[in-house]
Image (cartoon, rainbow, N blue to C red):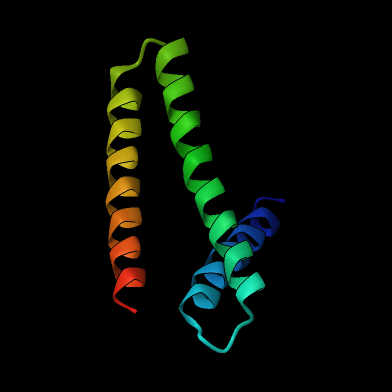
Amino acid sequence: MELLFDLLVEFILEGSVEVLGSKKAPLALRIAAAVVLVAVFLGLIVFFFAIGITDKNPVMLVLAVVFLLVFVVLIRKFGKKIKER
């Protein structure tokens, strides 16, 4: 079961990243891939915040803040790359 879940997540995330970098893929598919990646990142951030708050675990809160900062930096970097086109 764990292997199946791992393969499924790997295909979805790697496929989304590959589609985002491809100019040959239709725009609707690239937008859907971006939405999937954003949803996964935000889901992880919210999950770590929730675990950190409910368990009063500062390590999880720090991890959530780090993920949030990385997410913001990646979004800004991607936004600048789009504006250059």
